Length: 318
Image (tube, rainbow, N blue to C red; front, side):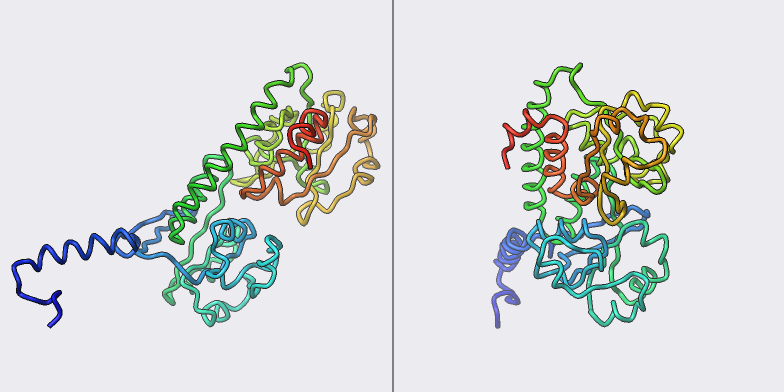
């Protein structure tokens, strides 16, 4: 009979030693965890998830950064980074839940926009025993917590901590550089989010964090946030009222804002904006400023090179 089931007086000691070893080697099998997502829903689990469908490009990118390429069994149709993500099966939150169920995931990660617009999908997944969680950070501190949450869900806590450490170290380098730029030399910037709707970014958004970290001054700090998103109302009238204060016009370019410099230059009334008159209109890739990933550092540096090419170009050469 195995020692584990022996009636020996040493049985208790052996059991304790055995569980201690298991706890060290596979801590998630011995420690239940509870996470409350952005919708206030509780998710209970006692081991890492290993068959994950990600329905938001930022989730996918971060999961790959955590070393989870094999565990990702599906992504959204908008996932474009890293390259390996493009080879994964594509899922759409508007399609039949049966396709998700047939893939046999143990976790589906969405964001609040999806859980609000397709509650029936989330309900069906949970009914079938598939965990679903809604996550999307809006600030830097929330981003760090979000990375830690992804690490906890996947058993990659150490990797998540390393991501945060690397990000903070690079951030300190940038902040040290920006401190050398005199306050009276800082550029005043309007950062466009959606040109067709004349929207900018919310003052507490990651995009504005990227701008101000790079040494820019946000001229639309009075913008009104749209719900719990990174976008804010502004409008042509308010923008043109600050025409003489805008040293540089920056716009994100991507799926959300399909724009080019010429369209901005030719926008009616924009010829009164100082930055437009001085041909200081620039674009930056949407994915570098709108997604809470490690590549935000690349976005900050690119903005810095637009604002202060000499200082940032020397410190961070291509």
